[in-house]
Length: 119
Image 1 (tube, rainbow, N blue to C red):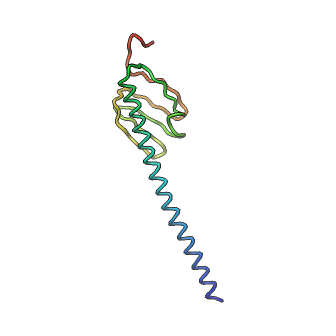
Image 2 (cartoon, one colour):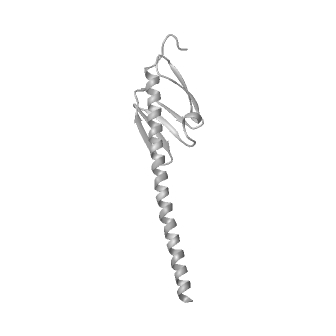
Image 3 (tube, rainbow, N blue to C red):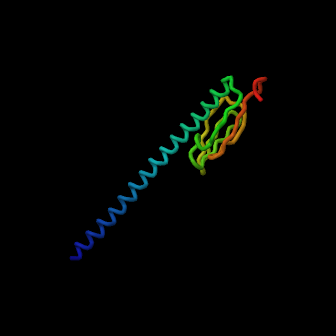
């Protein structure tokens, strides 16, 4: 009878350890996927600004709720796009020469040059 009880206790302990190992592995996979998606978003944001910089348009309206995930902030400065969320930071280079900050939920108008056509 005591052997049966000990075997069940050992079986429960092994189950708990197995769940801890699987949970930590899945957490690592989730963190890695988030990092990859954040890097991709920073690169795409920089590419969008590069296209804007080389276009004939003088202004662009950026809606943070459509571009950024909730809780994220994009800072553009010194030729870089910096994507911030909690303690994570991802950067991408851009040809855009201006500076601005776009938070989730904000809508801003960005200008890159002044021409006689712009008001």
